Image 1 (tube, rainbow, N blue to C red):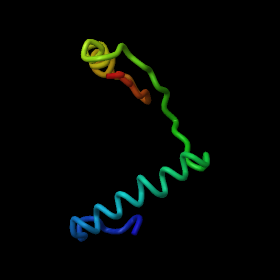
Image 2: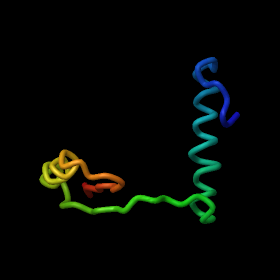
Image 3: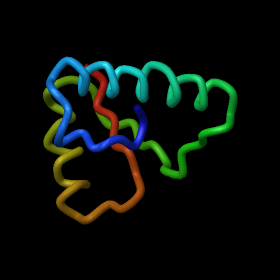
Length: 71
């Protein structure tokens, strides 16, 4: 059902469709290398204390970067 009109789907069908995309197609594609990410990753300070620094980076309009805060 990938690419189907999700607005017309009931909640159960939509849930199955999303599960199929993320746990099926995307997971397999990332593992095989068929699907690749284009963003870089920055790992910030850990815990709640690292959140403020991560939010400051987001507010500075960081583009194309994943900011990860370990908990």
